[in-house]
Length: 226
Image 1: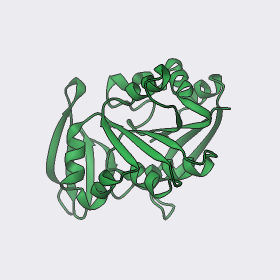
Image 2: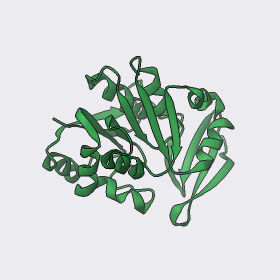
Image 3: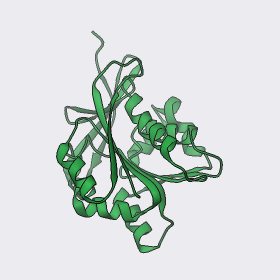
């Protein structure tokens, strides 16, 4: 059995620690003993972008992604972005970008140089608030993959994202026809209800973690602003 090798660590808010480990040819980002993401199970995170962009009617969509991680969602968004579109990523942990340029360079370093995208070191709520305040333009899609889901919050400051207030703010930051898409490791019927109560048109899909229809079943909410 292959051992896991610790490559780097990063402190995140509230005293928690992220750890980047290698396991043979695979890489995993851990929060304590929990796996947040890994190269063996990236398909659902890519589908977060692929499926959302397929539903957008905006000719030059402006996309906001909460969380860079290993860059799976960001790369998929860039690969499927129509001409003239742009992608903004909010990443809270600076070391994540160091890892992207270092041990994970073969995965995501090229995306950091793509002129159609920009990675900003901040909490995604700040960029949502900027769109609501008129500080920046609104978005055609907001893709959230900053936690393991509404019940698997990594840092307490993310809690607002899944509340009625957070959903309302995300909705207000979207252009008409825009989509709020949320990745989760598990279903959450209460969150589905909150999205519907906000007046959003909600579709819930199960997506496998691997493209061969194997691995865990993950949940993605697609909530469209009418």
